[in-house]
Amino acid sequence: MSSHQYEKYQERHQNEKIASYLGITYTQYISLNPSKIQSQGEFFISYLIEFQAEIPEALSRKIKDLNGNQVEIPSPIIDEEEDYEN
Image (cartoon, rainbow, N blue to C red):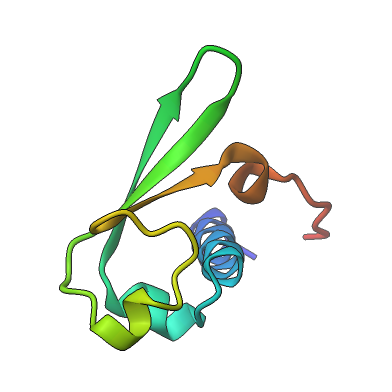
């Protein structure tokens, strides 16, 4: 696996974990055109996910902890390391 393929794989895997945490599918998550911003609080790091696309009402009811067009994700959800064999 090339480094570019591995990066793409990691990005998709990370997005799948975020979508699962939020209670939506990967396809629904990607359709909302998310952008991810790392933020650091006093004791922990988290990520702010901001959706660039309009969120349909039915989908907004499914998204865990949605606040407007944003949701905060605890760092362990995203940064959890896994072992991969190349």
